[in-house]
Length: 463
Image 1: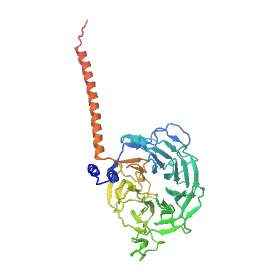
Image 2: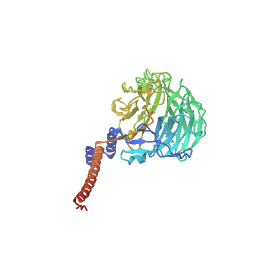
Image 3: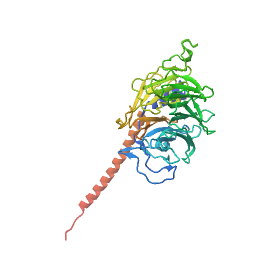
Image 4: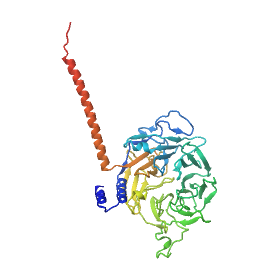
């Protein structure tokens, strides 16, 4: 950092380059912060049913938990990066204030500020996906295994709209740039369902997949373009303005795309056939510039696709990738403004750890181990990769370098940059605190010695 500041003083680099370099340095310094905990059963938050009964702490053993039955999904608002929303396997939804924990110097127990508990008017089964409304963080959208998509107000924590799709909803997506208010839903049905929040209609479907759809994502730059991944192994692109809708599928064997070998379509593959993965596709994510799409599948591969041509970028992430659970699994792509130019970092939610990759090279940059966690398969489960501490969801704090992870054991974990400067500051603070404590002990000891000396010097007369 000193060299960067010196270069800035000489005028050889600009302030933006220094900012990106510092953000990149902090990104590579991310470590677990186990002393920041999310306690979902501490002080009673505001709820949707007005219940104010005292509850016991959400601790099982010595572990403080956000949701007792497991955390299925989390999301952070994109405006201030202050509020985190979590959806639990027990059908509850909780909102957390991250700003309070920021000033706690990595030691804090966070309690929810608001909660939607299971009730006749809320979700009846586990929450599958949550997201804040992209234009106003005072509202959020949730989906569940109970076939319902709900729109909630963060002020009242009550549902303002409910849509019954008659099928399990695995995930949903709403565009942050579009003029339309269409929510794309990945359901147990083979068609992608579109829900119009403006009209309340939910009858429009995009047919093309042969089996259940597990993941959907709107393009961040083209408001009518949608990507979806299915359990039939295909990743499909859609233009909702077209009568046929489908633009084609991505083919793992296609490394040239629609331009062909000569740039004019020579030996270009048919876009209506092919598979993105040899097994279930349960994750699709766009880069924030809309130039690439990332897919994850049960073949334990992550693939990167050039969206200008539809070609497989052939990035290889090695055999370390694990992915066998039948639920949506979304890699997290760090916003490009937090990185040096021409770089893209991906965090992948593995079973017992979070993996940090260079997206385009496939290079493993860092392995973030879950602190104090030992993988233990769930009893009675026959599914491979079914672990209590399985990482289910990741969220990025947009205004700073900060990663939050949700886990099937009910814990929300925090990952923050801890640089050598931070460690030095902490050590200095500890030394100062330790010095103050030693001084206090010395004063007390001196006072006791004075009292004892006075007592022993007193002349005692026996009569």
